[in-house]
Image (cartoon, rainbow, N blue to C red; front, side, top):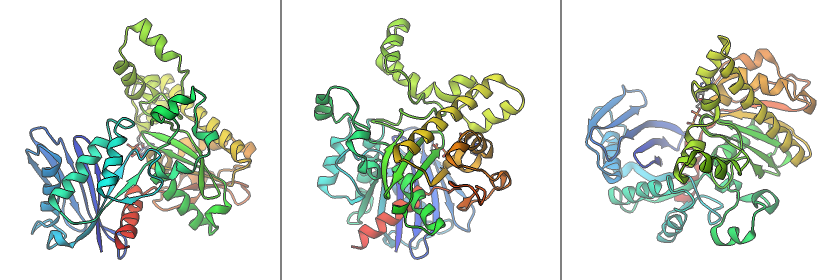
Length: 399
Ligand code: ADP
């Protein structure tokens, strides 16, 4: 059984082809600059050299066609025919309140995803183009949609309602949804397996720290709370996103700087966070490097980032009335020993004791970086959202 996983953006499309017999990746790649001249397809087949193709790809239907061409290409292909693809799984950013699990794509599911365009105007329309492009190229092949928000749908009202007029929730569904759910779900299950304990018996704070960053309080195997909100802007300080700020800053800045809604939105999403404070970069590697060379702004940006993360971990430990596992994942979480140390050394009162030597090791597998005496286990678990999408697709398509 072979499953193709697709993450369609407005001008890009990433893909992975899985052999579900052993969950190995047969090929992965991406199409960039869809809708522009000189679009690029980069294809990485397992055990063969990378292939690149530059041509004009004006829409997603053509993009999926090019992906299939690559997958069955005589030289760098990994399949003898398109018919070997049994099912396709899609990453969908926003599932609103309608989707609490992954589902098979039907006309009703498509209509519901369309109704959610308002909540994720940059992402959901692009995902829909990906679904339609697969329909056009591979008619009859089952498709499954996996939502970034679904895992967090277990949150109670106390976590997901905002204290604003309730009519806004009824009319516009303004509430906390949370994102990175596929990742929080994947790593929490992996942690339970690693510790050989039922997930339901653990209180975890999972920190998905990449360019975008969120943490989640997970108890009884479910999300109790998570830091991203109605959109992925809320919560932690991130690469270019502000995370939590006083909401009154928005009208104040619009007035003083004569900014439009779009401009202020762009300021908070694209020109804030670590980039704004360091004045240097949104990339943690560059910020850490500058900090080690004595750059004061880089140090301030790093310290602010760590400070917010510590506050959320403490808040979630309080919300769950305890914490058994602190978990780091994603680009920064998996790779930055400096960040993990700065966070853990500042919250030892919770019963967290980091083993500096284990923390400094570089490994690509799930591992415990706390001392044997540490009451809270500190784990680093590589995330793999694509694999979870492939698994859900396999499960649902096989039914
Ligand atoms: P995205 O949110 O785009 O999926 P990733 O999870 O890939 O992002 O994380 C990207 C971030 O990970 C970047 O800020 C990058 O600097 C950081 N990163 C990657 N490797 C390291 C490292 N060795 N040390 C510190 N940060 C790292």
